[in-house]
Structure formats: C-alpha cells, structure tokens
Image 1: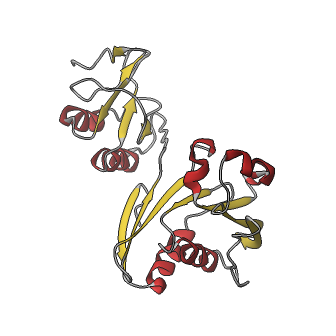
Image 2: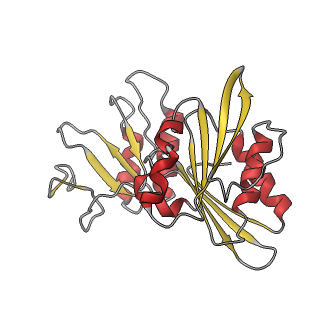
Image 3: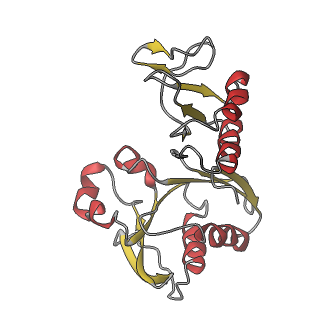
Length: 236
C-alpha cells in the first residue's frame, strides 16, 4: 500500500476493515489518524479494522457518548495505547477543550479521530487524513493521504530509492522542494516537467527535502513563491 496517497474501493464492511487492518501495520507510536465521512460511511468499521491490525482483541465500542475509549496494545515489545475519539456529539471547538487531546498526542499513543473535520484546524499537521465516501449501500471509496512528508538525504548516501520516492510524490500531485546554490531553493509542482527531470540530477546535493500538499503560492510555471518572490532558479 502506497501511503503517500492511496485510493481504494470496497464493497462490504469486511473489505473496509481489511483495508484498515493492512494500513495498521504501518502505524507507530505518535501517529494520528483523522477520519472524515458522512454518517454511516464506515468510520467505526475502519477503526475496528485498525484495532485488529494492531493486535487488539478487545471489542471496539463506539465512544459517541463518552468521546474517547482507550485500548492498550503491544508493538515490538512496546506498550502503546490506541485512543478512539468520536466527536460526533460535539458542537464547536470549546466542546472539545476538556477532552485533553493534547495529552494523548504523544509517542506512546496511536490516536484515531472520527468526525475530525470538527477540529481540523487544531490538529497536528503531521497526521494521516482518511476520507471515506459512501458510493451506494455497499460500496465505499477510501482515500488515504499524508498531508506532509519530509525526506532528508545526506551526501554520499545511496539516495536512488529516495529520489524515486520524490518522483512518486510529484506524480501524485505533491510538491518537491530541494536546495540550489541560493538560500531559497526551488519547489515545483508535479506538472512542471523540468522539475521532474532535475530531481534525478541532484544525487550529490545535501539535504534533499520532499514535501507534499504544501500550502504555498505558485507562479505560472508552477514554481513555489517564497516571500512574495519567485524561486531564484525558477527560470533555470
């Protein structure tokens, strides 16, 4: 499963749970999963699949009336906790302040949030966004997105895999930013062909940085605008 951006269709709750179970294998302490979808889309089914994938045998109950339910589990001999948060009954941001979400956003927890759109602006940027759309009574479209991915490669390392990953991010609609001889660097969209060609010409550069879905302005060539000015190498 390519976690940069993955889209899959399921035709039963069991298939939705299976997707979540597979996805859970990638999770580690500190991960946050924000779930989006209408009522009945299958968010709780997805959480149940996550729990199975994490090795949790306890029955997963919807925390609609209590907001949070927690389930301990082990991964690589580490004791972690899955916090299942359901914000359906909350009306506004002030309703959620007493939950102490900041306290469970830590390296010993995996947090999955249903109705995450209610606090989207308050969520950490480093998270998984999962959108579940109801197509019909049986079919669901599940889209998994990482809003921000940063990749660093040092000079002299075997960076071919990282460069291929950078190209994948470009093709999936992300933004690739890497340094030039200036302090500004260059950033270009996936459809800026010259950037795609240059990404494979920088193996000897230090600190290759890859970001996707960065909220920055771009000029007509697709180059990221920094401080109101185009990147110095935009015309290169």
